[in-house]
Image (cartoon, rainbow over all chains, first blue to last red; front, side, top):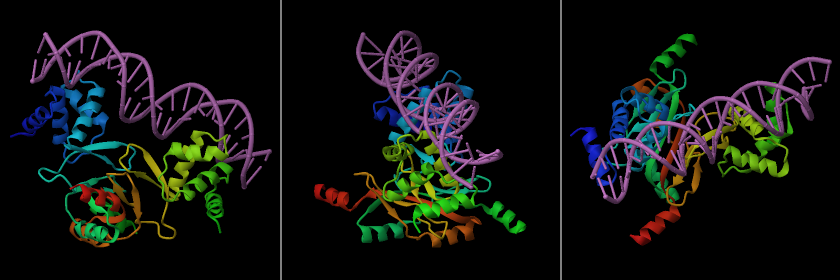
Length: 152
Length: 152
DNA sequence: CTTAATGCAAAAATTTTGCATGATT
DNA sequence: AATCATGCAAAATTTTTGCATTAAG
């Protein structure tokens, strides 16, 4: 079963209509698992093969996809709001791990679940029950680390 | 030495002029260590005792404060960009830990440095050198956890 | 006195909304 | 046929910029 079929299913299940625009927007997001697209970028990509789409539809569909937890809003501190397809097929928590290179801007996504120990500690000491987390790690990617070592 | 005096020092050291507006904006941010203020909120708070200030000055000063690493921009996924005074007196890295209660909206700031082990692992396995991180943990605070347990 | 900062208003940039038209169920 | 979604344009936000005036060094 393709992403689109699954998505159509979900739309129907939620009493929403299955439209070309919605399918294409999800396709674009699913087709760029590594990129983190802004609303404008999604609009341009969909428009390339579906020129009549409007930006408002993109925003409205993004909202639906967020509500359905099919995509996530991320903020990489580059001044834009970005969206990415959810990595959480099945489980619905613990995602959003990004390595952001402050030299070349490269973004590496991690799915590793490494915060469980910390979350236990927080529950024990503060009584706060963690259900999800978002982690951004800033630094220098392999290439830029090499570059730095060369210079210094 | 007060925050303002320190700040004035830093401004001078960077060839920037010490103005009332800049001092008051920092005062407001320093006076709300627990709140996470939007530009508009900062504007309103400063305006209360300095009515002639303009919003543009707030934005320009925020940019200076960010450049000087005296404040940090944070995004709590509530649709606003917020700013908070930096916790890093002395060291200049590893900050931004927030517990965000998805039930009552309470925000708890953590300064604990618990990711060092993970960062070592990332350096070893991916060659990525982490220099800073930003962590948001979503869940239920102590009170809302209690509330939940009562109901279920 | 020189340079930089301010306030205001206008302009960008981003996101939302109203409404007539068109597509889906 | 009824309802929901769309596109367009207008409106609402949020942030930035130009410029004459004011304040700081």
